[in-house]
Image 1 (tube, helix red, strand yellow):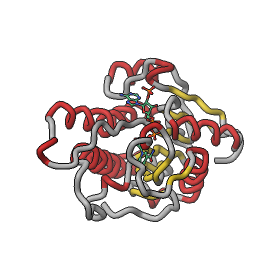
Image 2: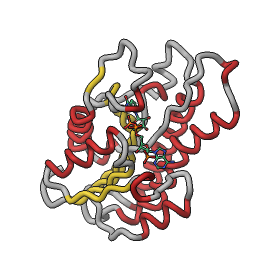
Image 3: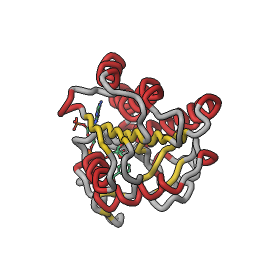
Image 4: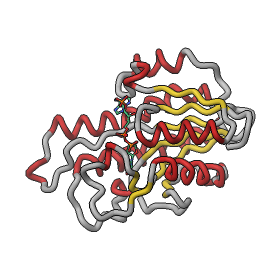
Length: 220
Ligand SMILES: NC(=O)c1ccc[n+]([C@@H]2O[C@H](COP(=O)([O-])OP(=O)(O)OC[C@H]3O[C@@H](n4cnc5c(N)ncnc54)[C@H](OP(=O)(O)O)[C@@H]3O)[C@@H](O)[C@H]2O)c1
């Protein structure tokens, strides 16, 4: 993003959310940050979403949802637990969709505007070769479908809007502390730069897609 633009980041208490807000400010954007621990915004609670977003003025060039949880990833089907599964769906899929539902009127309608969420490559069905992590994988696949579906609807009324799901890479945050394993890890500030560069390069025709930190489409 270039100067004098307005950005809203949801999840500015998190590793990637903090870095996104900082990098956007470095790039000259006017940044509004909201979080659960800082502002009481629980993305799974629609009344909370309505209250937090209702206080904001319209005209955002970017709304970036950087929230999410990993829970206790299941190694085997035997570990699948209904409440833990539903909690992942609520937080990782329903939450960002509720934010989109209520943030849509905040997006600038007279120019290019972007709604982005943090998904994860492990939500890809086509890319899933090793299994495991049932709830997290399902929640991100669900999120991807919600974003793709919403992009189709939004295109009809917001011709300059983009609605995309992004894979940030494996980023060194609390989230990955226990699970990064042998993956190459990047620092949150590098991930934020990569993700914002990807968004800068996307055109409205690419709305509804799922892209990684280099801008490459991720298989569904
Ligand atoms: N780190 C990685 O390598 C990686 C890789 C792929 C995808 N991702 C995705 O990137 C996103 C952010 O990850 P991160 O590494 O930055 O994690 P993080 O440091 O653990 O931050 C998670 C953020 O989510 C917020 N959050 C969780 N549940 C919420 C709720 N119900 N309502 C509002 N906020 C909620 C937390 O808010 P509070 O702390 O204020 O409660 C915190 O701001 C997640 O969606 C994750 O799936 C991360």
